[in-house]
Each structure stands twice: as C-alpha cells, then as structure tokens.
Image 1 (cartoon, one colour):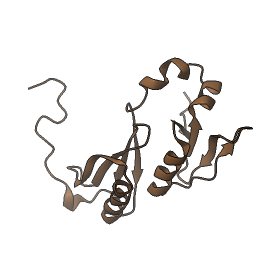
Image 2 (spheres, one colour):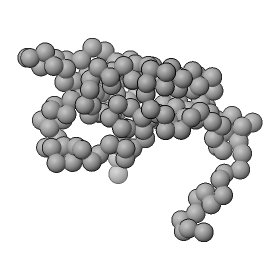
Image 3 (tube, one colour):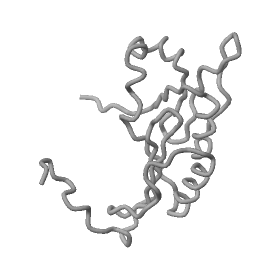
Length: 154
C-alpha cells in the first residue's frame, strides 16, 4: 500500500486578521490573503516552510470545498493540537511570552516536559490548541506522571 504524505494543513478561521497575527507571531510565513469581490479575506495559500503547507480559510470558503463544514464547523475546534518545534528552549519561552503578552490564551505554560523538551500550549483565535516544543534534551528527562500510559483508571 502506498504511504501517504501529509502535505497540507487547512485551518478554518473566524477572524482572519487575528489568526494571521497569531500564526505570524509563531513564526509561520503567512502571506497576504486572497480577497473576495467585496474585499473580505477568504484564503491564504501555501504559508509553508515545513514540508507541509499551512493554509488559512474563512468559514464561508470552507463551506465551498467541504459541505460538511456547515453542519460540523462549530463542533470541530479543540480536537487537534498543532505542534511547532523551535530550535531552543529559550525560543519556546520567548514565543510563548510574546503571544500571551499580545492577549492570546495560554493552555499550558512553558515547562520541562518529562520526555525532555521545553513545552507549552496556546490557544489560537478559534480554539485550536497549538503546542510549542524545543528539541528533546536527555538532561531534562524525568519520570512520567503517575498513571501515564495506563488504559484503565487506577
């Protein structure tokens, strides 16, 4: 069976200006959006640099290419974590600080995760969790939290 390649991530947004600001502050190369005839942004194509295109679409545009969005759109937020890796632990702290100072919501403050990365989670303007992670450093590994990896409650 052929192996699929993840090549695109479409994020359906309710506020283009705020979403472009959020992802640009993360360091994503977000070009200017395409505008519809009445001057409303509806699509940002190919904001990439990761081997995967990160694209922003308006809810109205999503309804054009995904008919299910009209019935499911309001229930989809928060069911995914988009992860970005930065070059250093300090980068995670710096980016997190810049975004929270700009008014974006923190879900998990920067901390040394048990697997050895500096890790934090923010919420984008539409409620999607966005993880910020440094490379793993074995010097920062620790014992996982009690019960981690169990499939049944204790």
